[in-house]
Length: 293
Image (tube, rainbow, N blue to C red; front, top):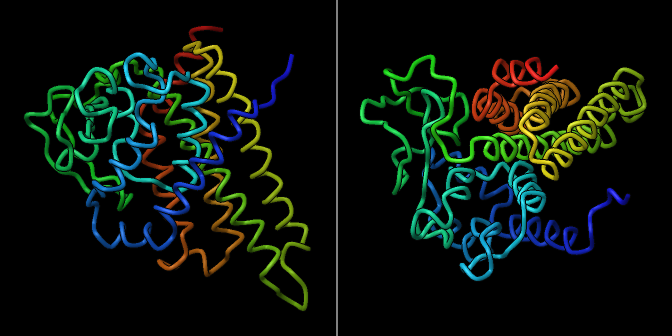
């Protein structure tokens, strides 16, 4: 069996990375942070035109006709770039909510007691009539809470398993990005006359980040092929750990610089924290895995 990506899948991933590098580079990321959670509608429509939301729709329905493994590659790149917005809800609503597939309509969905990007959405899936804004740790994920749904663990979004897997893919992309950031900084930053990457403690941090990232990658890719609920739960657990611990270790490698607002490390950590609590948080994923044992 060949577990490697096909040439078409590699081309898809490269194309999405190129698009995001052109339309959502570091300057755009920082501008989005400064804008305080304002959704870029032009970028949203461009994502729609590129097939981001219609990727899994059949060609006869105006989609790209690909599957969950290819969607995982797209969301991995979105996570790497820290692309903001209710990407998962809109992607899952393509073909069901008019305009979602084309990026003309922004769709969000209640996930348990939380709903993201409520003020920016055109369509909201799930009851949010009593939603109140809450302070989000991530400046690019505005959140509302539905008090009457407090303690609700089950997502009301359609195809919640796919949502959890796509969230895991975003976490995987973030873990990969922070690993690359840490390695690049360890090569460039010098201390005591040599690059800090030459010190054993730094090497161990970077190696641990890589191991967690690749373990999560194997689990996420495998779950994308099988679409098995238990494997999706396991993939979400591993991806959450890779993203959160990876961002923390990346911050450690950066030292004092990593704690500053100017460094991007904190943005990855904050987004990873938020994702870890949404679309199947750890407690729900652990219960799903334990029940299958």
